[in-house]
Amino acid sequence: MAKVVGGFASSHSPLMSLTGELWEMHAKNDLRNRELVKMPEGKRVTYDELLAGADPKIAKMINREVFDGRVDHIQKGLDELDTRFGQTDIDVMIMFGDDQSEFFFEDNMPSINLYWGDTIKMLPRPITDKMTEAQKVSSRAYGTVEKDWPVDSALGLHVLESLMEDDFDIAQSRYLRPEFGGKIGPATWYLDMERSTEPRPFGIQHAFGFGMARWFHGKTVPVIPITINTCYPPNWISPRRAYNLGRAVRKAVDAWKDEGVRVAFGCTGGLSHFVVDEELDRQTLKGLETANGEILTSLPRHRLQSATTEILNWVAVQGAMGDTKMETITYEAGYRTPAGTGCGCAVGHWSNGH
Ligand SMILES: [Fe+2]
Image (tube, rainbow, N blue to C red; front, side):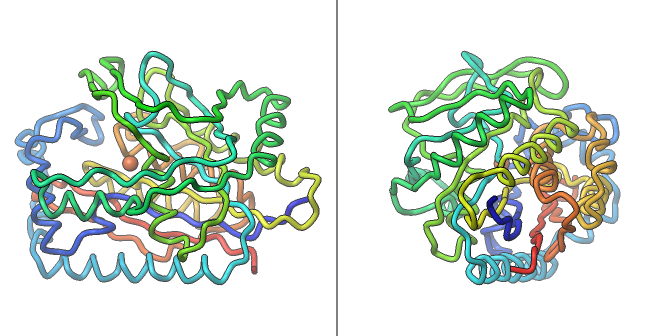
């Protein structure tokens, strides 16, 4: 039986990497963001439509002083998570993460995929002269060194077979293609447009890479990346399925033959974005802080749209952590425009006393 030694999670929005000054620069992109979803209606809107209905209190929080304060809290939170990761002896990190037009497109879009090759490529994002400073800094946050990152393929295979035995029909992959590209949408819910990506080389997805680069304390801990389709209807994962997937992965880990292997769970992503939904974020954090599966499996679908769905990565980790409660190290409602665009920025840790 393996030993579960903790859980680690954070958001990975550019707001987790940029200075207050660069928040201002990054915020300008929101005027042309095609994925702004208005709550509680759950409909995609333009920036101007969002601004017209926004709470006027938000405008008072859009200034450098507030941004700098939030950045300070966020960076302290990430540093704390990095320190705790460094203090925990971990043999393998099992991570849940979404794929946002990275490896998977609609030629074949898995709802759940487990990667169990011997290694997975970490590939720095290309930096070009045309990019703004904010884009350059946030691209570097996913890793700056090309590297073949080790994967615990033996435990990965065991988890895969255990999941199949437990009626999870998951996809599996063992190597990367030279290039990935394709189309996604239009489909249902918020996804009423087509997204197209030209084929290009790509390394491990952003939802894993951010944690590995930012809070693995410089350690190359072997990973098992489990990708869940949180973002793209129609076969996006439900909160209930994400939670139960986490539970089933935990069951597999508990049954692993290698005595004393020290396993941790983790994820990055969320919370609400590209429009901040503080109410949903607080509800999610309450579910995590009280290890309450009822709350987490009943998060409303109409509010879980676009990249806000990355909350489901956290829900899967909670499923794996069972009754262990998460400590919220940081939460900042990261509004960056008067329209309420931005990201709910969170850092969390589940301690098993290790
Ligand atoms: Fe993301």
